[in-house]
Image (cartoon, rainbow, N blue to C red; front, side, top):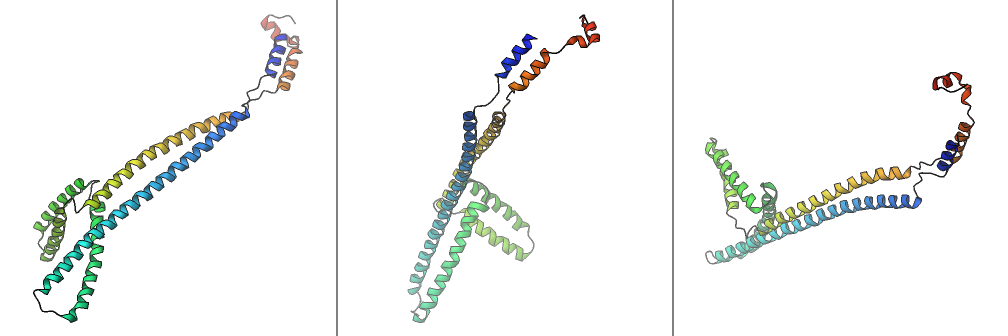
Length: 252
């Protein structure tokens, strides 16, 4: 019976209580990881916005480059025509208006042409885009050769001619679409790395959440209750259970 009392005394001084300082540090770490997760997601969005803006600049630069080339050609045509026809002063204003309309139309055309190279054709590089264009030309050629309706044949021929003109564009002409494709690859690679980091942080958050749960549990032993149990055990008279004592060889 004395051993029971000693054990109760020892247990009365024991308690599985997590120090408050450790709890505070753990909770602060949880908050820091949540802030890190938020920061990573914000950075991903900022990168996407930045690269979208850079790609838009490439598109605008391409349109300006090609429209300027068209403008030079319009001016050259107008100058050449002065040598082959009599001066017509009354045509100056209409010619100027026509040139403006043509340039406005060309801006739209070159914008769609940029999108054709960057978005419509398969592949993530200019070389891959050219291969996809070659395949498309081959498929369209076969379709045109098997067409029987003259109107359909004419439409296919026009579409084929546009693709073939695109195929003859030099790498210099396609500098801006090529740069846009490079930017897309960079953004994709960076975003992929940040996505991995984000998932790693999520795993850390889940793991640390379990740690926080354990630290929040105070398995404190009530010394008073243990003392009462020890006292009751010490005062227990086993002779009250004669049958049990007979079984274990005790004396009633």
